[in-house]
Amino acid sequence: MIIFGLFGKTGCGKTEILKELKKHHPVVDIEECANTRGSVLGDLYHLRQRNQEEFEKELDKQIKKAEKEGYCIVEYEGRKIGGVEKLKISGLFANLNNYTYKILIDCPYECQINRLLNQYLPKNEYEKRILISKFELLRNSLKREEILKAIDEIIKLIEKDEYYNAAILIEEKLYREHYMRTIRKIQADLIVYNDDLNKSIKIIDEFIKSKLADR
View 1 (cartoon, rainbow, N blue to C red):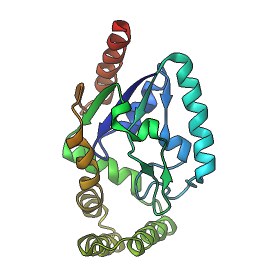
View 2: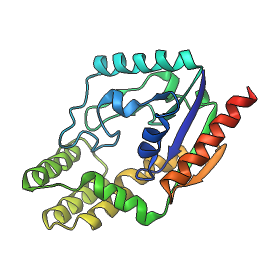
View 3: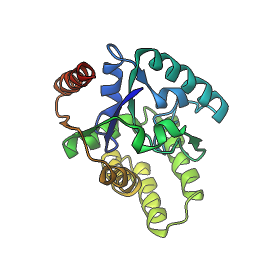
View 4: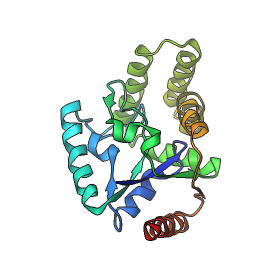
């Protein structure tokens, strides 16, 4: 099966792009299978992350469906997905060598931060307490002093409703190292600067169709 992988920094719009591509292409949506947004804060608010058995069952369904088409598009998540409780991802999508084509998504920094802000911004005091509790839980599972200090600062910013500054710190201290590690390992077959979602989708759609036509 031909695998088109979407790679890029957290908040660059990979999930939105995948959602639109799903209308015209077979997609294996790992986040949907796990019922999480994929990051350390992926199961916030209304989401209940699935357990390993449930996750593998849903993933297997989507893989079998895609195999009938001979190709799929998937957002690269690494070897594990989820918050404090991690779900192991099958070797098919965990191994970078299995991706036939690698599509790197980039975007303006301001767009990245605003996307993170929209994703995590609590709607009320109840959700605010949930958000803070997630960081407290995350803090208890980590050991690096630098990260622990960053989490303490993030909690203080949330307490003061300084969500934009909190989003900047979340991206810089919790996400950047993880996604940059992957980006450095790949050689992209296509790089898309996602400052316009519709334009980005069109570019990726045309790229996929051209590669399938060459087969």
